[in-house]
Amino acid sequence: MKAKSPAKKLYCENCGKLVDYKIEIKKETYDIRGEKITIDAKVPVCVHCGSELMDVYIDDLNFERAYKEYAKRHNLVYGDEIKEIRSKYGISQELFAKILGIGRATLARLESGALPSESISTLIKQAENPSSFLSILEGAKERISIRDYERVKEKVKSMMGEDETGELEEFLRKKNPGLDVLKLYGTVSYMLKVMKDEFNASYVNKVRFMKLLWFVDSAYAKEYGKGLTGLNYAHLPIGPAPESHNILMELLESAGVITIEEELKDDYEIFKIILKDESFEAYLTDEEKSLIDEVIKKFGNLPTKKLIDITHDDSKWISTSNGELMKL
Image: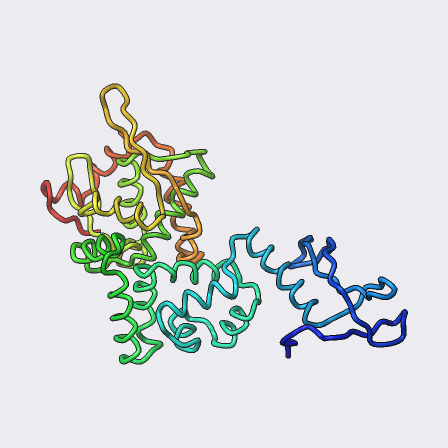
């Protein structure tokens, strides 16, 4: 059990008795997950002889400061932040853990200062956004009671009242009933990351982006019978594109997955799709990432015109007319 306050007096071995002490600030290095973390540590010192003393409470504070510094360096969510996220939804530790799909004991340790894994940290940080948390909640319906589900959903919906991301997501869901928002965010994030890693592509244009999404969802549907993202695709003159694709782009930018830059080139406006936050890839399984790897390596470096030609040869595009939905 942790000490709740520093001791009034500490034992000094040099003086051989309990003594008064003062606090000095000294550089100390801690080994956190194999990494050396140096902090300005509080050190109790005997006022009589200057010997460094040991106090459990102060020692715990120094370790906590080192853990926080490690979490900051690695962009991990930390104890108090987790409590704040949970508290704003007004839910218990046990219910929050069930919704996230982790153990209550694990969540309790994290709120007390234990360091989370990158995947759990990403999940909890995404839960801070009401729109993303609503998607997480939808995936947790089997783990919690109907009463808890409805209560939390009502609370989150009320918080999303003026949330642009929530409104965009709601609109897109109506057009795409099978939409899995978290898989969508993960797919886009990982797809753009692979483009950058494989082909040094700092951005992709909008047409290429739409075609790559189609190739990913088509490949997944061929393997598993449905698209990875749950998006519907419409027949357009330049090939398949997600239905309401302009709203889709707004949602992805509002949710912080991408940044969109516009550039005028030879009187032609280019929309550059740039990856903003690759942490969303945590919503994908290794198998899903592997499939995306294969698709991007096959199509990612082809000229945009070639990508359009490939989709024009697809029987799904040939058998539909302009504006009609295409079956994956």
